[in-house]
Length: 179
Image 1: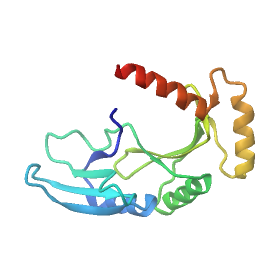
Image 2: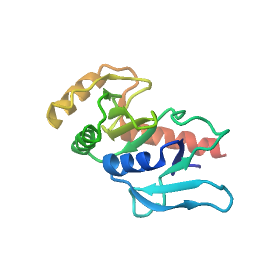
Image 3: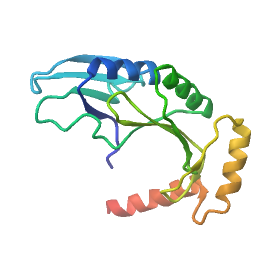
């Protein structure tokens, strides 16, 4: 089964985009240069020591799709505190428009990068919730309060269940599809 490992975006502002993703997400450049096949500058970035690249910036040329044409780039972190930390870094980088949401299965904050691409920073909640689903998220609350609010809310949502149950169910469906 295929799994998403990296994504790339076209950009007219490669230096500004690289700096943004370095400053806000803590990604580092693993390689950069002009390729022998694609005669344009490509910057490979990662935040994981076992992945050469997770995010790629491709300098846009005439005829390419416009920068900002991407729906969103989603980045998972391990805790709500990390979500808050990246939110603070994004504010420090000049981002002013944020959309914090609880998707039931994740706590997310959305904002745009310099090219207008939507960026999502999220952490899992331990629940499966039929999507789409979105409730307001108040990150000024303590983690324990957010967990309690989420748990109480999801007990009222048809189809919501602990993530482990959903993992077993989807695993069976994937196995059946492989036959």
